[in-house]
Length: 83
Image 1 (cartoon, rainbow, N blue to C red):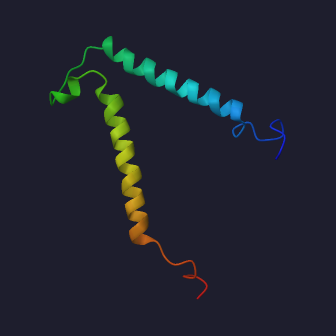
Image 2 (cartoon, rainbow, N blue to C red):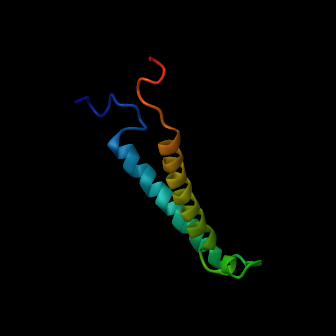
């Protein structure tokens, strides 16, 4: 196994942990800022606490599953271009 100091800085375990901590901290701060902002909801549900945080997460999950489904429909055999 390679020395951790020789790895690219983005794949070092210490850096990955730090990036996760920063990401989670930013997400918590942005969600808590929702308490300070006066919302002007258009549909009722978008006036709930943390709506844009959970809606963004749900949308991201839906896009991942959609991309996986699309990949299963569009994928070709490994020998498609060689054959």
